Amino acid sequence: MILRSELKQNAKNQLKNNWGLAIGIIIVCTLISCIPNLLVEINDESLAIAIIIPIITLVITAPLTIGQCKFFINLANRSNPKFSDLWYGFNNILKAIGVTLLVGIIVSIGTILLIIPGIILSFMYSQVYYIMAENPEMSIIDCLKESSRIMKGHKMDLFVLELSFLGWVILMGITFGIAGLYVLPYYSATLTNFYLEIKN
Image (cartoon, rainbow, N blue to C red):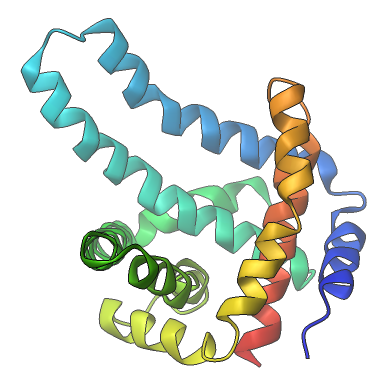
């Protein structure tokens, strides 16, 4: 049985003496991911920009997501987490893009058919970035299969875990995102501990 309180306490313990580094990772990742959207606002009348921006966003955010997962896995394992972990996904950028596209397509189809299947599929494949961060040699399909395997019987666990952060999300809204400096590293570290728990 997965205890949410233990996952959260582990996250807090791992973040001790690493808050600055974790916050830096979140800030840089967020800022870089926002750059394409700023270009859209500056050139909102350009059709070419509107077409190119989603592609640029994918190329940037996919490997950054894997890099962020790598950082928090190293943090949880106390394996010398460092800022350069953020760029880890660019070593395998094609796989990062491929897995993001494939998961996006699968979840979108499930959502179009019926909302509930889309939600189930999003939870089923929610661990692919962690898996790829730990196993860069695995194929995209194998990462999806492994995520599906380890999430069997744990989809509701993840749903409830994420729901437990609702109050923090509301606080972020009230503080215009400032609370995110605490909430987002805490949330990311907790989800990483969830992954490490279910994979075993």
